[in-house]
Length: 318
Image (cartoon, rainbow, N blue to C red; front, side, top):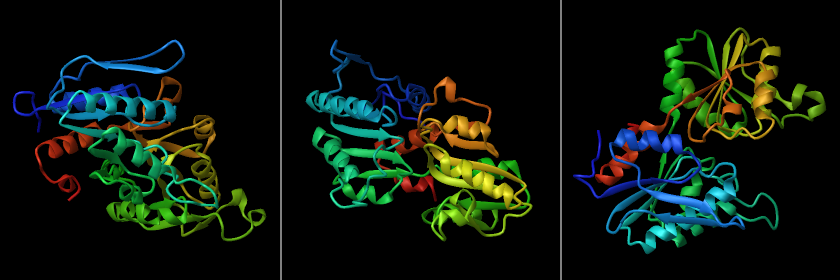
């Protein structure tokens, strides 16, 4: 399915965070990428310009807010403002990885709720819709007063493991609040689940501060999470799983944040393969044999087409 310039007033733009993904999306939809220039002034301030008319167009602006998140967020806000002032009809922000979504509540006194602040900033700048993938905290959708479409990468990840045709699988949630996600994958693979308890007893009594709840002996364990940041959790979990008798360990996530020293830890860990998506661009130094990247470009493109043609986005997951 595609939308062309001939039958819809739709334009797709991207900023600097994930140009390869944006290119695949525009190719899938069948329209050329919008022309814009993003530069820096001598003092580091962001300078940008839109190099074509967007008056009356529905704009889809692709920008993931991964590292360096603050810089990419400012690019996004400034471009939204420019598009609003250029008389765009709608400004649909396609944010595959929504940075700051982990800061969705006050965990301690006198802390901010930064995810709510980001929602306010996007709305105030002029965004009319947000399309994102697997929010760390789904309740972030409620911080907006504009439509938010949260897409799910689960079918992409689960189909990869279905095609692997593993036998004797156990799906592992890295912590208690990941059990729902693990259950979805387990149902797809017709497998039991286990989870990692990091708070059950004092860490001095538990190897690596973790205890496995569930039977993993002789099984292929698949750890699933929404993101991998430092990789401390999944690499430590892989060690404990092998010690508890797991045959081999795989891991999967939607967002490969991979802050240092994640890649080194994954290289040295018991993890046989980390399966993730291109929601965040991985530079060459992070593209190692143990990391497999699946594309979410078709998912995002189909969602954009459905929004543009006033169809239900939820049908992508029915």
